[in-house]
Amino acid sequence: GYQLRNPPLYEWLLWGLQRLLGPGQISYLVLRYALIAATGLLFYAALLRTVPSQRLAASFSLSLVLLYWFGWEIHHSVSHSLALLAAALALFIAALAYAERPTAVRAFLLGLIIGIGLMAKWSFLLLVVGLGVALAVTGETRRIYRDPRTLLEFIGAALPILPFLLWLDSIDPGLVGGRAVPSGSSLSAERSLQGALVFLTGIPLVFLPWIAFVLFFAWRVPRT
Picture 1 (cartoon, rainbow, N blue to C red):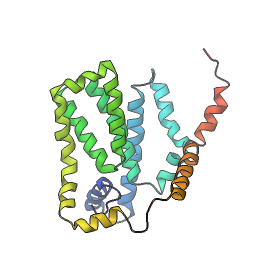
Picture 2 (cartoon, rainbow, N blue to C red):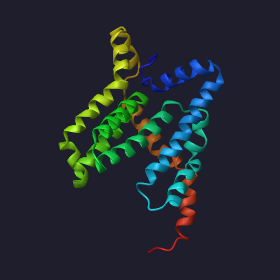
Picture 3 (cartoon, rainbow, N blue to C red):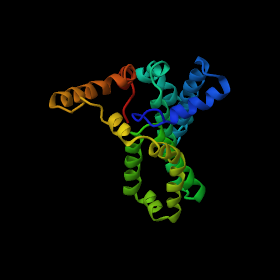
Picture 4 (tube, helix red, strand yellow):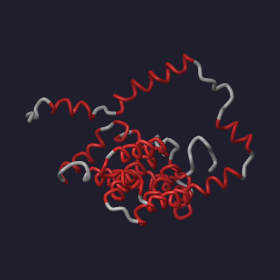
């Protein structure tokens, strides 16, 4: 856990690979492309729960390469977000599996994925909350909140988080505060507007050129 801006899952994985492959480029490449492969496979598995055919699920999964962020950026400038993406897809699959057939093992596994996802990137918490609300408002999945086995999720989630908390407890609190809130980083109205503008313009850019293919084919598909 050498930084606080991101939790240490990516560093843990990299450190483990470097014990086997050494500290050179090969360990970075193996980790990056293992996460890319895992994302593609998990995306396919997640889609099998939402679309009616394997061919359609495979088409969606392969179309990831048509997203600029996935087809280009992840090959040279993304690290923690790759682990986040894989964990998000695993969360979706595990949550639906547990809601479909609640068991103690599935509850523990779901919790473990939640803990791993939180150690991938802090923003994973937004996914957990959003999915939790969705499961709570749907009648057929709401029953898991009354199932005592759901408490096992907390045990599973604690396992990956506990080492990081122990490390955090061992360092200087002043260092934590200084790193969490850098000096000179006060939020002004101008900076807020700039951030909002970057966010709004970034959303359509993420989906290019995939969205161009969709628009091209959309008018050719007969509407039922």
